[in-house]
Amino acid sequence: MPEQKRNFFVLFVSAIAVALVAFAALPGHSQSSPKVESRDAATQQVEVSKTKLTALTRPKTVGTTATGAQGFLAAATQNAALRNNLMWAFGGKQQRGWYLYMPLIKRLLGTDAAPDSSEFALALSRWQSGAALTPSGVLDSDTLYKMVETWQSRRIKQRSYPQPDQLVTVPASEFWDATRPEELRKVEREAYAAYKRMVAAASLDPSLKLAVTKQGELAPEEKFLKIISAFRSREYQEQLRRQSPNAGRAGLAVNSPHFTARALDIYVGGDPVDTKDANRAIQINTPVYQWLVKNAERFGFYPYYYEPWHWEYRAH
Image (cartoon, rainbow, N blue to C red):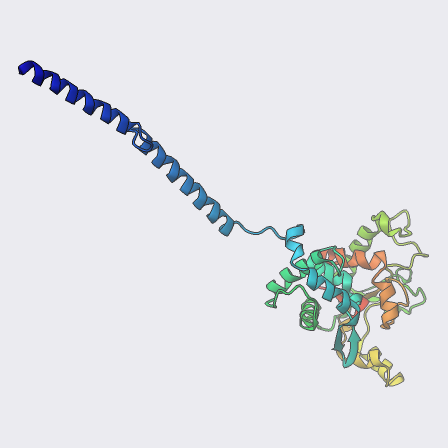
């Protein structure tokens, strides 16, 4: 009997051992695999979480990318129509479109994109956002008036009358009309020095094809960038009003910036000072005008948006 019991015990122990081995071999019951499985799952979860977080927090790339611009295709279509047809008013007169201000608008937006492109609409939307306007990318009347306000804010504010010792008499050769009388060839001293620096810089730009002397001055036959009008005294302006009481430009100039001697009318093409749309369309497309839009500010000159020839000097 002891021998039988012993044999039975051995068989019993062997059976348990076999059962344990079989159980351990089942999937998911390895001693080491639970830790590995748990680590892998945790790692995958973290990676998924990182992916989601990155997608939510990564700033969207805008600017000139196709992805950023594609959202403004509809705005581009509207701008293509409004460019020539937007109805607005200035000086009591009905205006149509904003094509005459394209160089100034592009400068303001910091883009060279065509006005009917989605890239232009995207750049416009950014500017609108900074100007507290709805960033629609559409250059509507509210946006245009805000642009006009911005341009006007950069003009001369202090319109004090100059003292005689603040004026210099400019040589007749530097005027568009070389026969202009001496009393009408005066410019505020600092403004004139800035004008000379600006002309010198422009003369070095081969794309403008300006005729210059060996000294770097505008040649006598060159008309572009010559001064059309500078200082006009109140007495002279009053004389103009008496001579032509119905003349719009003379009548409006009751507080002209030309009184300061820091406002210069500069020849940029076409009829020198004609505000007709057809004439201004010629002027804004000349290389000289577009150069001024991009560079005049470096020398302290800011435009009067409605008159492409009119530039005002503000000391930096």
